[in-house]
Amino acid sequence: MKKSNLLFLLFFMFLIIEGCSSTVLFSSNIEKKYNLIKEDLKNVQFYLENEFSLEREITLIDSKKIAPSHTLKTEEGRLIEEIYFAKDLPGVMLKSNGDTLFVSFEDYKTIPFCNQNTSDGVYVMAIQNTQVGKTRDPWKVSDISTNMRFLNYDSDIYKIVFQKKPRSLVKEENLSSIDRKKRDAKGILLGE
Image 1: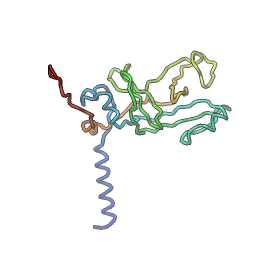
Image 2: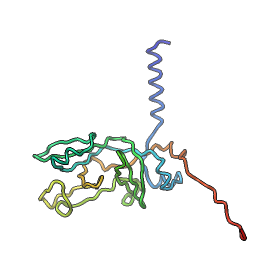
Image 3: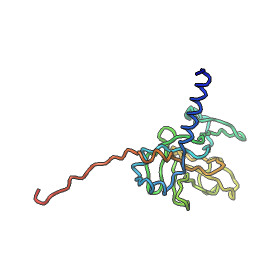
Image 4: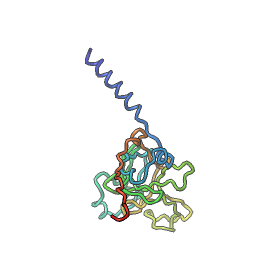
């Protein structure tokens, strides 16, 4: 077989295998279907359904402390730190609290996803909708009627920039093979 035909065949097989690996929106229905408890979710690979970025105004002194993967830009004379989160970015759940999952996409910094306000039980990014001027505003905008979306990320307040509200994805075929930690209770007999 010619080398070019072999490469084409390998590429075609890769596409077929990759195509079989589908992601689905993570929801309470998926949790129920696979009988998952919150502790199981620490063994699940999560992904972002769509891209978004976090932005905050910083000082020149703060700019020397930002992570190398973050971007600095200027807008209207202000220095802005930007953290970009790409579509299909992998993450892991580090902890949970009720209906909220705290998923990390970088260095143990977490983003909350919850299903409290969704009719279909899909986990979406827990965003704080606030009116400018009523909470800490990194842009110090004076227009109080402007709605902005914020997220507390790594103990700092960031403005969230997105086209579609970020939701979490999982590869469904991996959910049935989750390694569950289990131990059998021994029981206690009277008189022992």
